[in-house]
Image 1 (cartoon, helix red, strand yellow):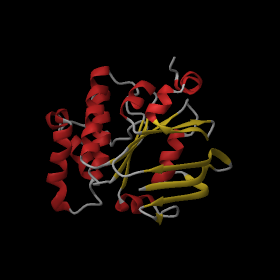
Image 2 (tube, one colour):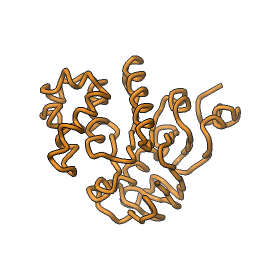
Image 3 (spheres, rainbow, N blue to C red):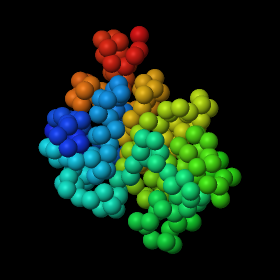
Length: 234
């Protein structure tokens, strides 16, 4: 579904990611792992069209989308729940969802909203609350829900569990399983390596903007050198 070929991207003269190649197959979960500053968020934002592509190509469904504007990528079926959530905090939960669905016909709003609320029932209880008044866990649910309103086939989620309570993390990971069962492809950036390895089909490990390992999540967990050096597992 998504093919990244020798991707380099960054900010002005600064290169955040260099020569990254990665393939995502339909209906799979891929974890992007690495320390802070490894280039994980920059990779996701480049695929979404928000960070400058400096080299390489991004293919989606066999078509080169490297030069498309962010909204065109959304219309192709790519959505992102960004690091820091970036909600419209002075808008209600429902209006944030409405913004997420702006690329879809208005007649689909109720159906798509109800899909999100079934996935995250807590949002249904806070539908008219301002996003800025939500707890951290509720804001994360809303950020994911807003991305889902675009009816993506690929959703990219940046730092899913950062700062969240364990029970909220459990809820979010159950939601990911449901999305995968519904046929969605997921690219997940996560600091909690135990959690991402428990759910991912494939993983890509970045260090200083470059790939140091790619393969099956089960192989990553069973590789003692990789686990100790990059994954924080012993």
